[in-house]
Length: 587
Image 1: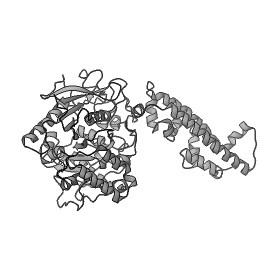
Image 2: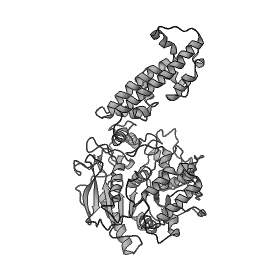
Image 3: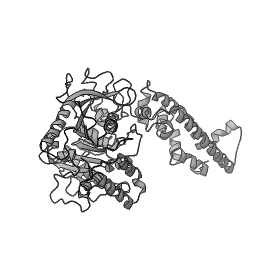
Image 4: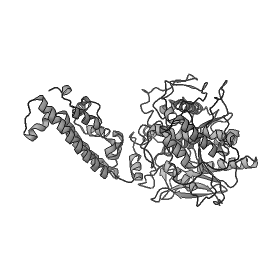
């Protein structure tokens, strides 16, 4: 009997339920009798065994000391049984000798296959439930084991940048010597998670916690020089205060977390402080490698700092939390703005500012086809991993807050108060020059960030005028079903500023980003005109009500993001308008 003609409704349902589009794909799988078959099959049943890809399964198998290896063993058992069941589905006649029954008519064979399909589905459901029990770690343990970075160059490591770097002698940055806190600060640590890990940080000395209204979390650049970045933010704050700039408050707290490198900062951190084996890994939200056995990431560290300042018992007057990063810190913050955990308590308004990052995590596999400078961009064929995490959402395994789709992360990003600030003269060849970064807009960081703005607005189908921006895209997907043609993100371009944090944040655009509601656009291409209704929800607040001094309840942003896909455009516009009014008192 031909396989092509032996499919019954029950058989087709069985194939569909276990992830095969057609019988042919199942048959082809059975021809491969190697261990790689089991790994491939793990990609078919990820939800029942806790993995998202064969690469991830390989990485866990290679880490036999982890709890996840127990999940790997259970996965092998489940998939092996699964393969046997599949064999009976594809070749039902194999079951006949076992049953000592002979059926000679086509109808009898089809009836047996239908019955077998029904029974198999029930058995598979039971196996799935059992395997789920074995894999049922706590949510935090699950997310950490899923993206635990390995010490080799296997692409299953969460950040593809580690694959490119491999085991090369990566000495980006310099060791800092003894920790010395700048004047006005202290070097301390803050608890992250529940197992005693801590993130080192430069912290404003003797803050008046009961009076402070604004906290700045200033993320250092690729050199991991938190002391310099604390000083930079402090200088910008003092300068704004001296200029009587509205919103600049001398009681503000500045915290500069320190993402140590195990390679270049040995001896500078305590036994409980987080540090990273790869000097770049923290920029992508990767897990730390110190203390030994930790499963926490740089995203977790930022979440912990945000939650600290959301504590109304400690900070009863807190109104605003600004997470800001430039360069390498901008790389972390542009991704953090997408995936950050929404605090469970507190009403302080959160703003995310990313300055001049070398790359971002694209929400789709689309990239610019060409740019106006006529610089040749790498092709997909030349850059196999161009959409793997940190550059896209392939192989992204989620956070402690769970795993969402790339489109859901897009929705979070565009409904949060995000400011992209770009130095117009940031055109030198520097930062990430790997092909995956070059595909985002060529050699210049400025162009990559202008294209990012163009890309986000086009996905959202806003009426923002992007004429004159550098990129030409093939048709991008339409995400207006979640954006409803509006975004809260703003772009401000600082003329005369290169890749220098103090230059970027000391001018009018930078001060407004840090201290004000309304943010000037700065440079725009010749002939650019603002769209008639292009104001975002947050920016519009400045005109709607300049006297209201209430911070945005974080829950309002969350509710808007979670329900946007089911509301009509009219309803969502009303929510955005309400959000705009509630942010009028920002600073």
